[in-house]
Length: 183
Length: 433
Image: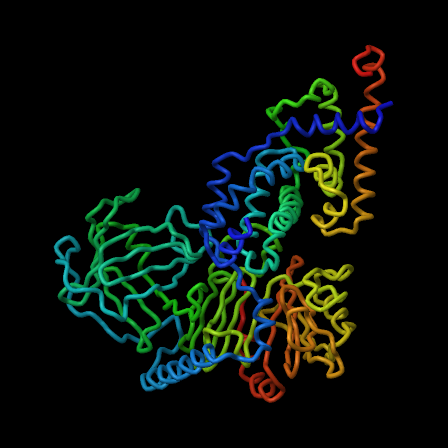
């Protein structure tokens, strides 16, 4: 990948196209989870990758390409969401068409709705930390770097987001537990 | 109560229900947008390069460029130029009455003075970005029009020739939405004595959309750096930018805006760079292709941010300094290693701003890791002062939170004193869309 980045830094559009193909699924997966809207996520991804192309000559360390693009993506998510001021009110319910998971049995339709609603009440900044931690599996230090925030801030945002989502599940879980669906 | 492990598994399962693959059409849209987007010149590299000793090759090229440009200036000045860029006096004027385009026989090759890429205003062709400028390219026997921004999408591709009465004849080589292959158009044209401003007037065209798109004034794109998009040396007159977009939010998707900045220059100036975030005007006597060896320039940078002072060349934003003229100027006066004058109020095109002169404290010792001398990097992206350099920094409030940085940069105090009276009238001529 570093060779592609070097070539793209010098204006090779084909090399950059290869980088787009190599990274866009991972980036889209992050954006769609933060924004909870496929169209917004596509726009955010496009904004991030066009910015990446435009400013690629300023990237000093080609090995940091993906982390750099991830940072651009997060900012693009913020910008995209804020540009559409009414998005929170108008956001479409994300279709449940993702891959099946071995833990899927844990997740009832009720859980999904509860998590969806609680997640949308979080700020974009809290969502970003939560997604980068729980979906991308990044350590907090790397999340902090991706977001351009101190590690302590990343930790507190993750703690807050987790607390809000857990509280939402637990508030909803009492009758569910009594029916014995979850041990 | 859910345990931490339960919660992690539930959260993971919930996040896994979202899509993992970006649709192909989104990839196609990204690649198309990239295709229309020029890369930003690495200002940072320019900053670090400009302090290094010139090696023999750029020195030789620079000297050759100066000789060539000086020769060109002598040649051009021997001819009366147009009064302004937008209204050239005719240089070559075809004669004769317009004939029916279909009957106009293809003639000789396109003359050498027309064989170039020419920048023009936005044209109302379907498919062009709403505010983008246009570029026509004429070769010995072909013509096409494209959106300015390095797009590979070509419109109105035609064969080109000169008729016996000196008119430009175009014959469409591909069907378009409203025109057919073989549609012929003939055009009168005039070119300024400097051969930098081309005016095209339609005689007749079987393809109306081509006529509408082609008629008007075109400016020679003679950017000294092949990877750049700019005009290069310009005649005295008033011109418009192609790419710089002062009101674009940092990181926001960009689309070219023709004429975001209008500027007026006297004889002896060049537009040496035009990018979404930066724009350069320099005296034509500078080595235009070699920014590292300029001794003076006017540089515009959109939406500047205070640069973190934890270390030189931090290339990160200074926390706590908002992007406003007052906040940035107040902060600048506290930056270690900078010597600044008292800020003066300034107004350009009705936009308020502040101006202050900047140099480095001679006692300052900090360097960038890859730099060669003491430096203070004070504004993002890539604004710094080092050595004997003298700068005038103007921060302009364009409204709605948009700030434009205008930097008069010179290599030393003597150049600063001599350049400022030339540079300020150009800066004061700026008009913003």
